[in-house]
Length: 300
Image (cartoon, rainbow, N blue to C red; front, side, top):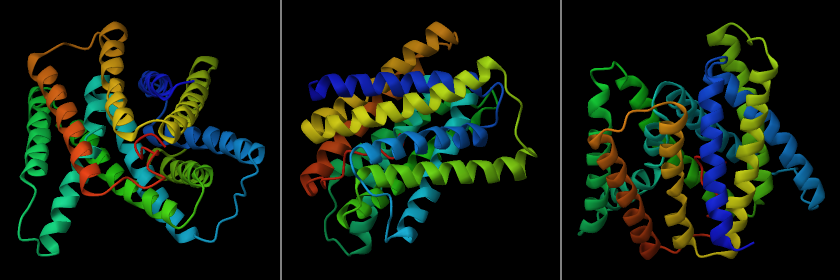
C-alpha cells in the first residue's frame, strides 16, 4: 500500500479514535481510558513483536520510564480535552507539538549563545500561538479555558516525548519495543491515577466496553500505518498529510456532536496547521530527521 494511502488511513483512524474517546468520556475518566488504551496496545505490541522476532527486553529502563511519563501525561491531558472540548479543537491544540518543537529549537539556540535566530521559525511559532488565541477566545465565556489549556499543554509535553523517542531510536531501541513500554506505562499510570483521583474503576456495559476496545485497537492500528508510511514515504509529505486528522475530526464533530462552526476557531485551526507545516519544513532544513522519526508522540 502506498505511503500516502497509509498516512491518510492513519489520520482517519486517529480521528475515529478521538470520537470513541469522546463517547467513552461519558462513562470513564480520562485516566481510565488511558489505562485501557495502554492495556490493549501493550497486548497488540507484544503479539507484533513476537511475530517479527523483536525482543522486548531492554537495557534502558530509565529512558523508557521518562518517555512513558511524558507520553502518558500528554495522553491524559489530550483525552481530558477531547472529552470536554469540540473534537476538532482538542485535536488541533494537541497538534501544536510541531510548533512547540520549533520553540524548543529557538530556546536551545538562545541558551547556546546563537548570534542570529531564524526569523522564519519565530514567525511560525507566533503564527501558531495566534491560532491558539483565536481558538481559545470563544471558550472564555463558556468556562472551558482550563480544558483548552489542557489540550495546549498536551501538545507541549508531546513535543518533549518526541525528543525522548528520538533519543531512544539513536541508541538502537526498536520502534515496537518503544511503543510496547509506552503502552505498559500508560496502563500502569492510568490505573494509579484512577485509583487515587477517581476512587476506583467504573463499571462496564457492552457499549462502553466496546468503546474502550475500539480506542485501543484504532490507536494501535493507526500507529502501525503511521510507522509504515514514514518508513517507505517522504517525511515532509507524510507530515503534511498528517494534518488531515484535524479535517477528519472537524467533520466528525459537526456530524456527530453538532459542534458549532465559528469563524475564529476555523481561522485558528488553519493558522496552527500552517504554522505546524512551516515549522516541520524549517526543522527538516536545520537537521535531517533521524531514522526513528516515524513516531508521532501524540499518537504512540
